Amino acid sequence: MSAALQTIAAGVEIKGNLGSIGYGLAAIGPGVGVGIVFGNGTQALARQPEAAGLIRANQILGFAFCEALALIGLVMPFVYPTS
Image (tube, rainbow, N blue to C red; front, top):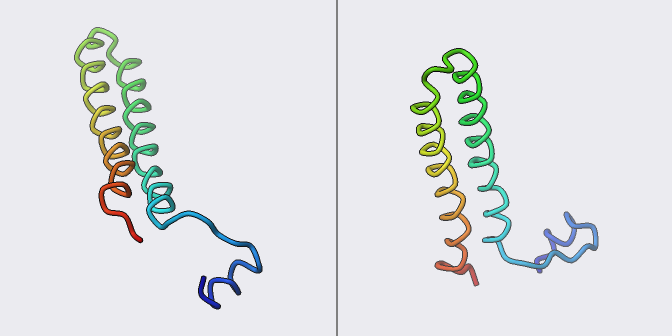
């Protein structure tokens, strides 16, 4: 561990690689995306309950795309290790 990192960490040893830290940061985006998809879907269902089938199908599709980003972020540290 470099001297600068030891100074920043104030004596606390950081274990793990940058891939796991990167995945933790990358998981924020899909989490926000899923929240937006279901929040807007709930509003749309409240405004037009007769379009429930179409809205629900679009919600599931949006959820799948957001979660695909999270799964890709989970796999990438294993595909391209940093060490």
